[in-house]
Amino acid sequence: MLFHVAYLCPKTSPLFPLFSKNSKSLFLCCKSFSYLHHYHYLVKNNAKSQHRRPLSITQMTTRLSTSASLLQNPTNSVPKKSKKKAQYEAPESVLRHKLDQCSKHGDFSEAIRLYNEARASNIQLNVHHYNVLLYLCSPNNDGSGQDVDNFVGLEKGFEIFKQMRLDKVIPNEATFTNASRLAAAKKDPEMAFELVKEMKNHGIIPKLRSYGPALFEFCEKAMADKAYEVDTHMVDNKVSAEEPELSALLRVSSGVKREEKVYEMIHRLRATVRQVSEETASIVEDWFRSDRAAEVGMENWNVEEVKEGIVKGGGGWHGQGWLGKGKWRVMRTQMYETGVCQLCREKLVCIDIDPMETQNFANSLAKLASEREAKAGFWQFQEWIRHHGPFDAVVDGANVGLINQHNFSFSQLKHVMYHLRKLSPSGKLPLVILHKGRVTGGPAQHPNNKKLLESWKKAGALYVTPPGSNDDWYWLYAAVSSKCLLVTNDEMRDHLFQLLGNSFFPRWKEKHQVNSFQ
Image (cartoon, rainbow, N blue to C red; front, side, top):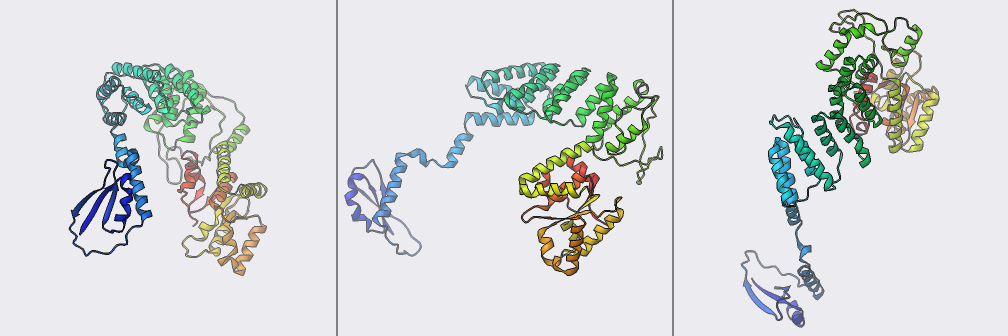
């Protein structure tokens, strides 16, 4: 098969019609030629030649114009892969990759060598470069066991941090946290705390890890008041202390004999930590064995106030401070499956979540639901709950009606509802939440089921969620706001429940959810 390939420039455009009729001619525009060159290439074609319809003058002109445009603007023709390759091979990207490898392997010396080399080569460092360097300058930064002279690392770290400020590189939370670690390693918790407070000037919200260096160093130095100041700053910024922070505060409080703070920290541990570590347990034991623990406590107290405090606190603890004086008997024991202590033979009581926490969670839940549901619809539901509630139990009707069933079972739901009423201290029916589709179609059309639904509605025990709504928000809010049991087999693991966080919600589920009804 013979192809006629020609290079055509503007000066030879009158010749274009002569070649446009030839289906085997290919034209390319080339500015370097002022006349028509004609070359013949013999191309081997194993398949049978097929007739192709010749291109029109308009089609050929369009193709030639595109080719000319690419020649005039060669930058537009650079493939995306080439651009990515150029970015990847840029000095800043190469430096970032090498520093990340240093961070991965804890190679402080190599990171400093790369930093000095980059400065000498006038490579512009960004916030990521500086953060990795600051991280590596902190002692025991990765647990790799690398033996780095603390003094050298600290001095270099402060030098790099100073240079970062001179370069006017905008810091982020990681920058201040790493600098705070350097200050704490230098045994200067005041500087570490000042760096955390400086975040506000840059519009940065501190994280829990941001406070650790200052808090732990203050506790280590037995500077209790300063440690409490850090703790207050955390609370003001809605950062919740976890076991390591509370354990450190408990230790320093016990050491300086601040019994009111010991009391506070123990109850904060009770509220936030499901199972304390061996180290924390030892701190608690040391306090109760101390002479100070035997000395503190009221000898006369109001019994009624204590009882009222137990009710308000969720049961099991009163929140009235230390009661009684004398030596504490401290022993470790185990519990029977019935909840009875094998040592003192007393039965443990279930301590509910702090009522204030529950109310705050209910408010947050209502806000989230209003943002994702029809606002007016969910507001009406809240008003309905205030008028008909509180309830002793809330039933996820759709879930219960389908447990071990192929089709929705009203008889199964009825059995659960009336059994819960028998268990209820008030004798009231629980609240059942059903979507509108469940009460208008299918089994709901059966006369007996219609009668059942009508009786629940009259008793104020049925709420029907509107079309297009997610009934999960409704039964969850009803159970939280009523501080009651929730009957559902829903594991509550999807994205909706992830919005509720991992602090309060898991504890609430543990104490209020009945996974299945036997």
